[in-house]
Image (cartoon, rainbow, N blue to C red; front, side, top):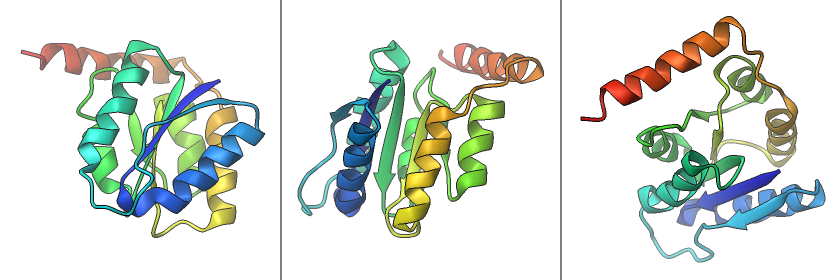
Length: 149
């Protein structure tokens, strides 16, 4: 799977851990995050990843900032992106099963190392259930198209 990863200045350490984990799992990883602690603007990095996801250039995206909230807000401004801020394994599983989330936003400050490894594994291996959930995801796309004036 092709996965694009980005972070702001608060997510550097977690980003390196995640990139290493993804590579060990055999995924092709694109790193678009900052590698320094100099302050940067998270929307710039979120946009790079989300444009790749929306265009189908990568299969999924992972965004990291201090809380995960800013990246989540920025990501969901992009048509075709269904981003979720996951805080635990339950969020990681059910955002895939029912919402077909294609961007995972994580908090560098609030999620432990063991938890994040398991969350990513779950998020990458959980399939979208489709069915009635596909109808709902399709409606999200309709909202995007309707509001793109």
